[in-house]
Amino acid sequence: MGDVSIRDAHVEGPDLAALAGLLADGTRAGFCLALLDGRAWTAIELARHVGVAASTATEHLNLLVAGGLLAQERQGRHRYVRLADPATAELIEKLASMAPRRSSAPHSLPAVNRARALARARTCYDHLAGALGVAVTTAMTDGGLLDWEQGLTLTGKGTAWLEELGITLPSDTRRPPVRSCLDWTERRPHLAGAVGAAVCRHAFDSRWITRIGTSRAVALTDTGRRALREHLGLSDDWSRADPSS
Image 1 (cartoon, rainbow, N blue to C red):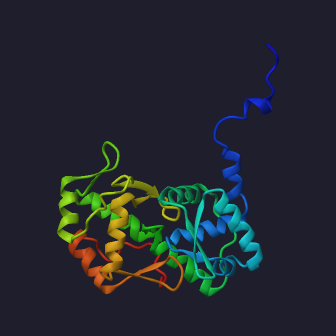
Image 2 (tube, rainbow, N blue to C red; image 1 turned 135 degrees about the vertical axis):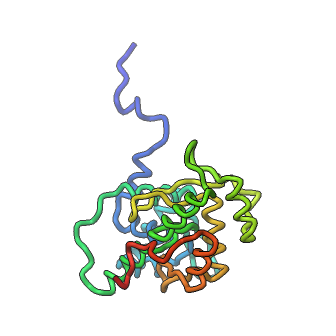
Image 3 (tube, rainbow, N blue to C red; image 1 turned 180 degrees about the vertical axis):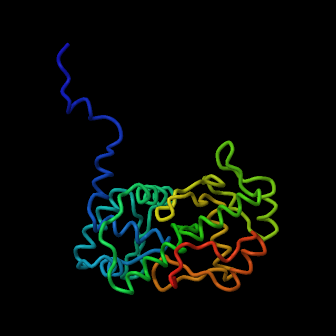
């Protein structure tokens, strides 16, 4: 039997190197992190966000779409891109939590405030993240709505809690009801999955939270503070990343 070359031995199977290569470029990685806000962006918006020319952004976006990390849709003359699906968002957030921290801290006051706002409360695709997301998950656990003993599960009390708030879960989704997502700023888990998405959507619809500018940072409103205190017993000292501190 002839020798099998190393090259031949690696022909079959998933091309993990190709996927890693898509995120090995700082511009493309920056696009994916920006798109974790769950919204669709134009190439021009993403170009401005990371500071590259529109033509450069288009080249990188074409690669991400071809590689399956992004999906695109057209409305008139405009092309919008978004993360392909929740699984892709989960992959990006997971990699972000494992990535080394940049050594250079932001120096300008606006940059510092943006970083603090993101750490305090943000969306991770379609669920809550940051200090607020972790605090809500902890409060749900302490209140017996979530159980971690045999993997993360929604308890019967948790199901009743959702119904009491009028939160319904989609019946046609293949997403798990609950999933743990490691928060990249807190380094502790926050709630993802269908329940995490539904709670986040309810928080927006009920004006518990509002977006801060065009970023994925969110602010907890006075209505939200009262609601979280009433429904989860969440005190006002949940944040360790208060922009005003």
